[in-house]
Amino acid sequence: MSLGRPDRPAVGAGAMAVTITAEDVVAFVGRAATTIARHEALLDRLDAALGDGDHGTNMTTGLKAVVRALKDEAPAEAAGPLDVGALLRRIGHTLVSSVGGASGPLYGTLFIEAGFALDGRHSVDLPTFARALDAGRAGLARRGRCALGDKTILDALEPAVHALIVGSATGLPPDEAFVRAARAARAGVRATIPMIARRGLALRLGERSRGHRDPGATSCFLLIRSMLDGRTRGRASRRSE
Image 1 (cartoon, helix red, strand yellow):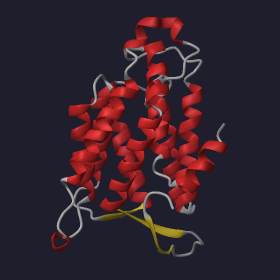
Image 2 (cartoon, rainbow, N blue to C red):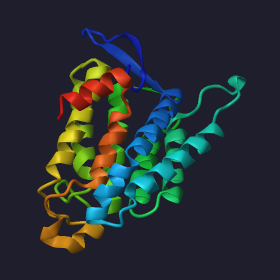
Image 3 (cartoon, rainbow, N blue to C red):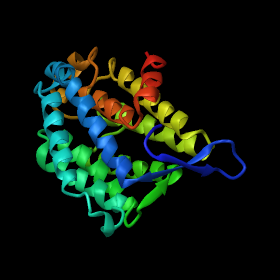
């Protein structure tokens, strides 16, 4: 199962509705921290060609900090469910304060804006979650002053969010909607290879930034893929090579 859990059949559709709770978000963070740590050296190598060479190290540090922070958020059982929006904002603020370079503020803004969109919600359906991610995408684009094609995180994030919105709106099963989002993110990563960087440290390289995969877009793909469990992650990776 991907992020969230099956609820009841959607009216007039064969797909199952999905409910996403704070518990699911915490599980996603754990998977994301493990995945980024496993790819830390790769992300650092990609960043060495375009930036400071520490993107993987910074992301690993930041996600470990998030895991520690979320342990403090677990309420006593009698306190009731956590607010999904508040939890996402906590993730965002922790990333801003713990991830070095531009990635901390960018990823932090993504989670903070998504959290504002889900303020006061203890559970959300897939279309609502997709719209919240789109609010986060818009916030990241504003914070980074970036657009699709600038060779940034957004080149993976925007197509992934679009795929999730379309999939959820057309009644795709949640697993398939998240798999399509991950495939779209992976295609976005590959599309950065011939691009000339227009933002960040890579901007100074000009034409020399061509031929390199963007490290931020790559970490974004890994985060999107972490919304899937082991079974569906394999589908997302194999079918997007």
